[in-house]
Image (cartoon, rainbow, N blue to C red; front, side, top):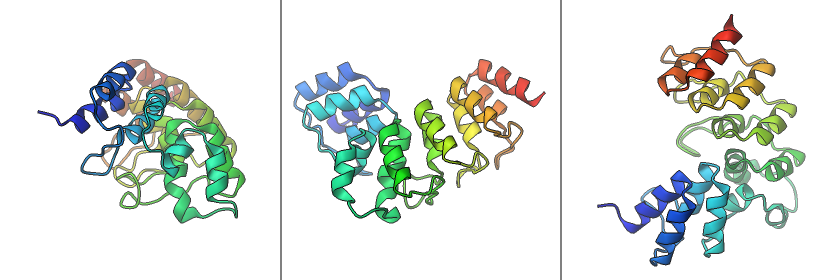
Length: 220
């Protein structure tokens, strides 16, 4: 059967605030981690479940710099990096802020010179190498997508594992509004990944027929 930690992380991944609160009431440690070092707070933020993340913070989950960035706590970032940009140290907080939809933190990083298309390899962060635009797009974080596009983010960049574009990530997650934004920014709907799949095919594979229609119209 799943361990207490696994149950908590599964609830956080779903964004199920009620289940998270119930498990914490049962005495599960909010800071417990799985074998990969992920805790419930990071898991909630990874899925842009900010309200669930706030429940965990209120229940004394430990808040790291990555967490603080994703929660929009720019004052913590000010304290951590008063002297400007440090790409190696900032990559994790920056990408998690993109993924969680924290426009305030993403703007903080960009204002201090963070390269908008910073693209660490999968071995270095998150298990799959891609820029922040991918992370924001897959979770439908429109404010961050708009901010990154305004800063010049390249919609043609692909992830290191599958060779999928930002548009493909958004389409596979059914993010219609973000798909529109990316198309307007010039994203190529005909681009195919290393498996020969374009954004429309990925939308269909994941059950997003309306997004597939949206992309078919963009191609024609």
